[in-house]
Amino acid sequence: MKKKLICFVMFYGAIALFAQPAIQFEKTTFDFGNVKEESGKVTGKFEFTNIGNQDLLLTSVKPGCGCTAADYTKTPVQPGGKGFINATYDPYNRPGSFNKNIKVSTNEPKFNEDANTAPYVIYIKGNVEKRAPTMFETAGYKNGNGNVRIKDNNVKLDLLNTENKTFTIQVMNFMDTESSFEAINLPGFISSPRVKLMPGVEKEIVFMYDASKRGEIGSFRDIINFQTDDLVEPKLTLFVESNIKEDFSKLTLKQLNDAPKAEMETLELDFGKIEKNSTPSIQVKLTNKGKNPLIIRHYKSSNSAFSVVLDKTEILKGEFGTFTITINSRNRRGMQNSTIEIITNDPANTQFLMNCKGEILQ
Image (cartoon, rainbow, N blue to C red):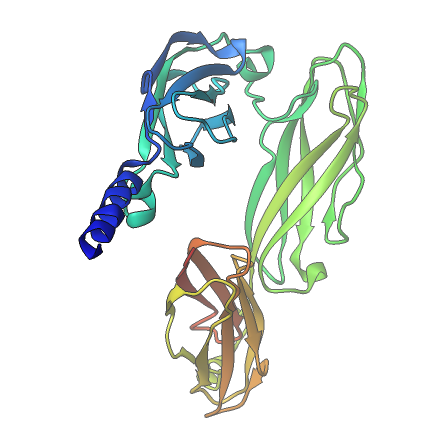
């Protein structure tokens, strides 16, 4: 009787072992051939069959860069049944050949048994035929969608906190009628004239940036919006990135000798592997080895996942302040990097850049 029971268990165990789903793609590469850049998005369809004897389910469909899985079978596919994955590629502004992949995982046992099992990979490829340039591109105005455009909507400035500096932008009216071009949210430290743009005319507009009016030291990004008469895109945006440094040029030799001296404990922070939904912190000391008080003018993180708190902004001779850097792993995953900028009143060490990294586990 015992032998029969063992045989029974082994028999049905063997059935369970071999009862599993299995995916088989009809093809693993879809070749679009030549695609016109201006023709819009193209989609290739990959069909597959469940050649196993249990329901098959796609558990992960991850397109590579530049490709999207617009649609795919999200319900279980019965044994012998068929499913599909649609892979879409947008050729606009991507002339030349392309070869993109989509990684696919299923509920097949091998994916559960070993987390390192390589997914299935399907490919789309083709060649994008470059379109003729538009009148905007011919004139050098590639940004925007309307008929009044800014040639380069990113401005970068380096200046001292006592300095006024001008910067210019190129604007062109491609319409057949006149258009206004007026800033609607200029900050008090930036000034510019009101401008009328004649039809088909390019104009250079001069701005004045007064760092002394801003009254801050460090790196900043200001967003300026402009109103035009263009019906397609009536509002335009200009990004002004400024790096403002303290002016030490008027300090005497004695003042320089008596100046604060900032010394960071470290500029490299590695949080290592971080559990999901945790908030680990690391503390770093900043010591004043000079004679006069060390003032922390400014500090910020380039990545919102990393927050920075300083216990005091004025550090006396021989004392130290403590930066507490915390990484918030909630709603994030994978490798995280940040640069923390610290600005001081030490003439020899005005700026520190602290590099932070950590890998948030799945």
